[in-house]
Image: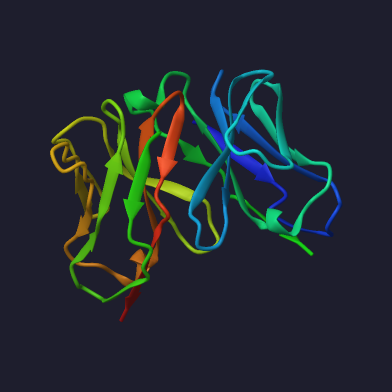
Length: 116
Length: 111
């Protein structure tokens, strides 16, 4: 069966510090990978998605970046965090193929980031 | 692009009450529709889905029917329990590998 893990689960970082959140998927090949952010009262916002190694699409201009160094690894980074980066970050994957055909998106456990 | 509209809540119900959470969408083409649930402190879990018009998704006593004519996918449950307290997200697929989520509706069930 497929599993998705992301870490760390919680993180408290000072403004201006770097960020690295990691996510790995097991039990599948060539997944589509996603990073979402959930801010209080704002629902889920798609930040990045990737359909293959080195292929990253950004949905929202910001000081975050994403990388996919391996097929089942997805990393969310920042060089300098802002207070507004605080939130709950969710990694997710879906099977290869269009989501429009009914493929489900599966989420990781989430990472709480507090920028102080 | 697609959009999904749902009430933010919170929705507060007594145990065994009937639940409806409305969801409407705008999309080009024929999206697949989803309901996800998020329990406190956890990630999102798929609750149910429907991939074409008139399909009914169901799971754990929850149901939602894909209504193309009204572009809706309302979530219903006949008798809620305290353990159903969570945030519920409606979502619609569309575009290239993307799913658009609603803002999430917080449900609180009191004994």
